[in-house]
Image (cartoon, rainbow, N blue to C red; front, side, top):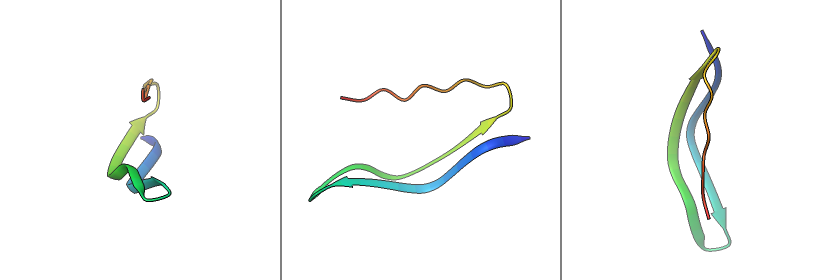
Length: 37
């Protein structure tokens, strides 16, 4: 069973694209860490 689902996520800061169409599915009991600058 999927608890969190992201599809085609895009994050921009002005003209800079930091995340470009990322998809992610996190199941129950899983731990996910996203590191960035």
